[in-house]
Amino acid sequence: MGPAQYERLRQKATAWVRGPGEEWAARIEATGQVPEQLWAELREEGFLRMAAPRSYGGHGLSFTQWMGLMEIFSRSHGSLRMIVHVVNGIWRAMDPFASDEQRKKFVLPAIEGDIKIAFTLTEPGNGTGADITTSVVRDGDTYRLTGDKHLITFGVRCDYYLLAARVEGSTGHEGTVSLLVPRDAAGVHVEDTSQTMGVTGTDHATLRFERTPVPVANRLGKEGEGLDVALGGFLTPSRISVGMSCVGLAQRAQELALDYAERRHTFGKKLSRRQAVQFMLAENAADIEAAKQLVMHAARTFEEGGEDASMLSSMAKMTAVSMLTRVTDNALQVHGGLGYWKTSPIERVYRDARAQRFEEGTNEIQKTVVFRELLRAHTKGGNP
Image 1 (cartoon, rainbow, N blue to C red):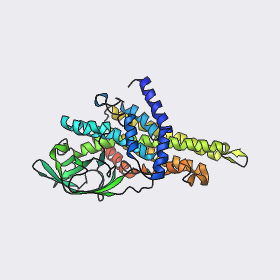
Image 2: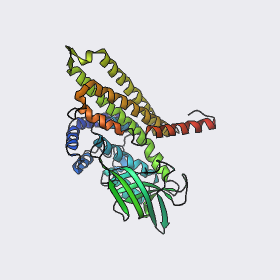
Image 3: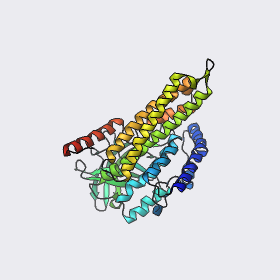
């Protein structure tokens, strides 16, 4: 997309986030629900297909351009940001592995917002990689799926689960499969676990599959490529996107803190004239900018197909998450006791920020990924 058109899109997104977006945020917080009308409005505004290619009905943004828009949407309510983030990213995991028929059935409808697809990897007793135990047994043209998944965002209201499993009896990366499992298939049991601290209104689920029939035609790629779909296709760009989400939300927290510091007077002085507050907000600004530059470096590397994209995505995510924790804590501190009340916008920002520490893997998981790549490069005698 050209610079002028891109700037117009950024202005449109900013105006929507500050206007209708804040109205939706208030409604979500009041009701605890994300209504279907919000999904419909985001679809009508074209915000659910921004990152997709023009040939798929999208805006044809580069990945780095998309990050510039993610920065804007992340200043809004956590559930609104979640919808925009997931829908604009889930197609990217499916498309390289999809057949023409699968592209028509799953990829294009997901981009249009006609179907909802939930990324389904994490398990209660395992991590988010080669240790998954949810398994399939092939029975002719059907897989029989058995196992448990949890912490599945949109797991209640979705139409399909983009699910990673393994062929029964296989180990490690080999034998993993990526399946699109219908939400209403036989043997699918859904427990609604949506009552969370922040990101109010987004649904989450714990899932159990009991010999659930899944057509082999719903498998993306080959047997043995399941984690390629999940990790390379989704998690690497998604971790970069979450890193930028942290940047955007931190900017919102900083904005609220600066506004409050300018309005609030103590002992005859504006709070913003107190050196302790000045230093706190100056550190915030430096923290935010440093994290943003690392996120954008990771985004450019992914966009260019660089080998270090996975490692940099984890570096960016863990750095940005730690930054967001510090910035939101400082911003709440600037507000004093009043910031702890639900009537204060910083209260919601503070709660929503904490969720980023878990999304797409904890900092501990990110450190594991980074060290694995460091060791691999060292063993080869190269530099990461």
